[in-house]
Amino acid sequence: SFFFLMSAEIGMGLTGFGVFFLFFGMMLFFDKALLAIGNILFVSGLSFVIGLERTFRSVGGFCLAGRLLGVVLEIYGFFLLFRGFFPVAVGFIRRVPVLGSLLSLPGISLVDKIGESNTMV
Image 1 (cartoon, one colour):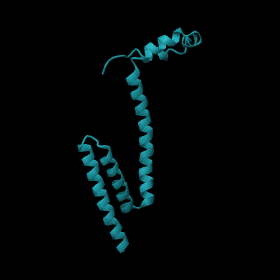
Image 2 (tube, rainbow, N blue to C red):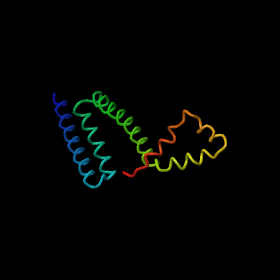
Image 3 (cartoon, rainbow, N blue to C red):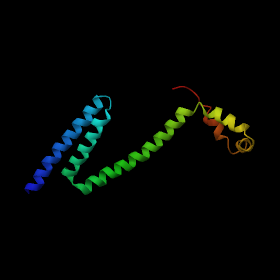
Image 4 (spheres, rainbow, N blue to C red):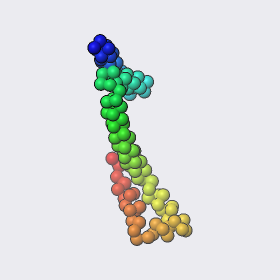
């Protein structure tokens, strides 16, 4: 029908502009405003082309997987960033009366191993 063809054309135009703004935003050293405009145009164009239900299903699944991956990478980055500080913090905590005795328990040797691999990358 005419409405379907018109919405598909509008969707292709929006998707094309979205890809352009995303690419241009990356070329300008990840400009936040251009990347945001590109994301909005791309997702709205995608919803015009394939429909709202399929867009939310595909984009929603990707966002959930992206969030979980982001959390894991952020935790890994936190340990990489502060691994040189962990031995200092553990040494301080061992001097605190109650907490020091807890860190001296036999099952908690992982705390010492965190700071051992203190090589610079």
